[in-house]
Length: 134
View 1 (cartoon, rainbow, N blue to C red):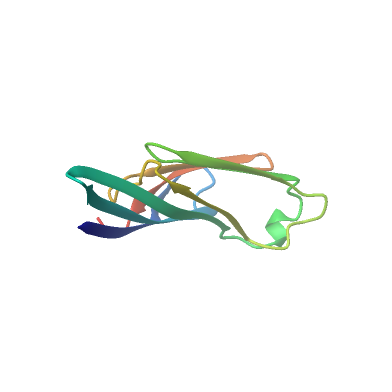
View 2: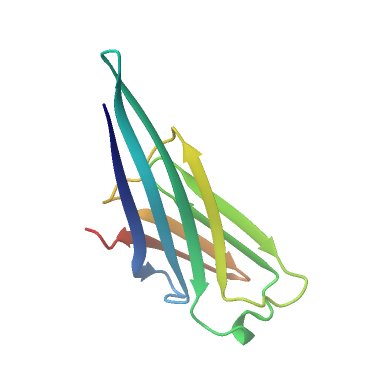
């Protein structure tokens, strides 16, 4: 007998912190599947997930035209991600995205707070993402 449990943890920014708030906003979407089973009397478990981190600058492209480098990171209790983009020309988008997936790794819980740090030009901002499912 196998039991599959799927859960989705969409996180949206409900509070920005820092001097330059609310310029960047973030969104973290986590979709995971847990599978519980029985293998001849032994309980089995596996999980897999997909996640996407989206960072959106709420201003204009003109405001970012002098940006040469963008660095951002996000951190859950058990994992995280980091990205650096360098620009020889002004950015053409206000949205920056990172995606990933795993099998058998740690999962993101529904009530987890995700910490985000963003550096662009001489500015830096930190904020938290809270689940809209709470």
